[in-house]
Length: 108
Image (cartoon, rainbow, N blue to C red; front, top):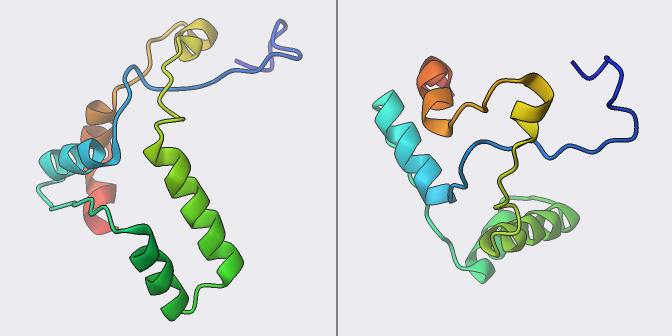
C-alpha cells in the first residue's frame, strides 16, 4: 500500500478503533485466552528497585520508567482514521486481534 504514489513525506499514526488502558488489555487477553493476565500498578520506587536488583542496567531502568510515566499520562491515547484512509479497511479492535491470536498469547 505505502509503495503506491501519494504517500511521500506523509506521516501516519496507526491506531486501533479505541483507546485502551493496560488493565483493559489484560482483561481482554484473559477473556480471549482463558489464561489469567493481570496488570499490577507497582509504585515507581518499588519497580525501579526491583529492576535494579534483577540486574537490569540503570539506563534501561530509566527508559522503562520514562515509558511507564508517558503511558500513565495517556499520551498515547489518540485514535486516528489513518488505517482506514491508507488501506480502505477499518482497523481491527483489540478484542478481535486477541481472539485471532489467542493461541500465541496462551503459549508466551
